[in-house]
Length: 280
Image 1 (cartoon, helix red, strand yellow):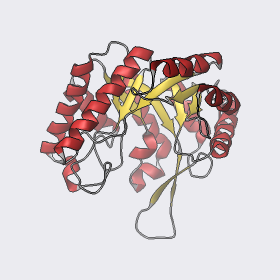
Image 2: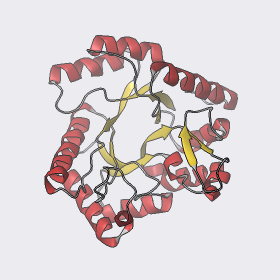
Image 3: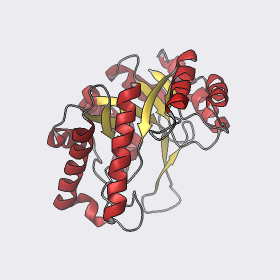
Image 4: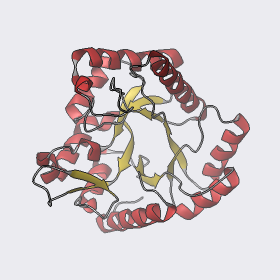
């Protein structure tokens, strides 16, 4: 697998970003630009990644195509199309977003409407519109699973792929986001194995993080955390990923705040990979 993440730290140009990338040891990274970035600057970032032996694996969208405000929803769709076109032009395999929500609270909120048939129909329509507008041939539009919206299980994701029915719609794997109940947490490795067994042929990128159960409260509180700070056995988790995905599959550390946090997470995961005999 190609282990990496988001290059964290202060940088103002591709040269400074490349210095951070070299220090990070990452071999797969998220795009440090979007489709509005000047083409010459994008080219410089891509050249810097190539010099460091890294691939730019993801172009993020992180906008709400289902926004209850029609103008905001249209802007989100336009941004998603722009990002998918960017990924297509520059050979970035995964353009990733969440499906969105009709909630007025937040772009990624837990809302009762998230699982209604009406919302599901809107999800299908929005994904199709994005893909059909861009017509990519090598980039894939993907959805990151979420604990409280579609898709929230590997079976749900597989059904979404079938219902969207577009060749360039694929899967983004974030198994921690789908560990959203005690049963899945307590059998984490079994659940993660099921995620990859079900979705491996469609996976274009994977997010890597940890999870823990807060036992100080009787109600279920599952908390995302950095690798090594939670309950996942990364020797087993990495073996699962290695079993199902090709050797050049990007696996990206996510949601750390600083370069030092990413460095610590990378060191922990790399050590677990070495123990499992897995090349990164």
